[in-house]
Image (cartoon, rainbow, N blue to C red):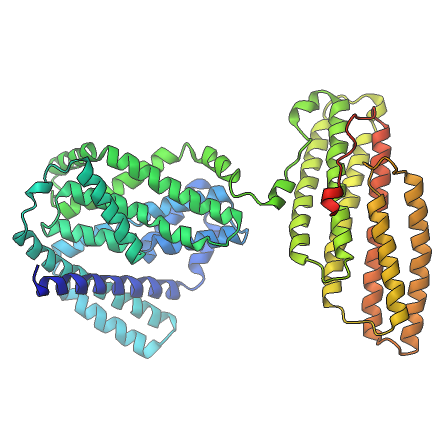
Length: 552
């Protein structure tokens, strides 16, 4: 291989990648937030998600950009997993537009006649308009021109390679050759971080006679699978949902790729026959562009009916402790047919919710800075469980309850509300304590520390699952805390009056103590009503949700 051929190959790839980079960046800048709005608004149904993914990818010429943006939306909780998967499917179809540009424009149009003017006009717009929208469009236009200059350079280089090398050894294209070609396509995409670039290189090589059709088609399949590397890298350290999207992307591309390789001879034969019959040209580049589109569309057709199962499978993976905590352990639709068992299960689940709420309360009272991230995750888990309890109660209400259980369902909803409010107060209190400064009055600080310790003791005692729990003892503790709170409030007001504590700091401390007091009230009320609910059914063999682990 001569130096001129190597230089042509390297330079052509460089120009192509530079053009792709300029074109993608320019279009994203020109669109501003429009692409983000399209992804967030146009994905309400599976079909709209599919079409949006295809359209946006065809516009920006980067399936990786669309995939990473989609993962970002899922990571931020703005898009559901099922909708994100349809966008990913669509982006795989949209990315085939690059192949058509190469096949139609790169091989059938005088590239230099429009590429050089496009570069000139685009860079002039960039020069005079800067980062404004016109300048961004200019950058995209210049990238478009550089993109096709790279194709022209590659086409010339590969024509030279086709003349110098005898490729008859690959004509048969056995299974080993096909697998090797797919691996090369995968490696090209991995190195370039652009499946569009890798596939364009393969198309120009095949169009220039440097690659047999079957080998080139296998390399395209490998390049299509290789694009998943960007998604895999982008979800390092991301949320479980984001990792599920990346896994769904990998599953789609790998399954589609395996099916395409298995059917490779049949698909190529059918495409060649159809091209001859329809008189659309049988050039390698055109057939490969058509092959790329067909096998991605077939992939969508294959995976679309399996989408629900794939979502279910992925939701069982990459789970966090908080997500597991948010799943009900005792509520099962099968027990709805037996109301006494259903009410007992409801009590057990409410016991779990109470354990989470008490644990959050105790952590929010910590002398050290509370872990607000953990509290936020626990709050989400508790809210999810409360929603499940509400749905379960609504279903149970439609069944025929025995007379002795009539009051159980309103009591269950009341318990859930008390614990939910306690969790909200714990989250608020943690944020307040995080931002507080030292009080400055040692005696007053000691009294406050003693009060919060007494509240924490009440939270520990208000566990219906404990053998020593009684509503009366917890009510007595709460009454003592009310007296303690009144004395503390008076001391704080006097300290503010004497200017021992700044007025702003005094007000902040009073707000925090009020939240501590209200949290104790909600936990005590939740436990009392849960105990009352338990009294309406036969005492279960297993106590209500042992919660020491939640409190620890």
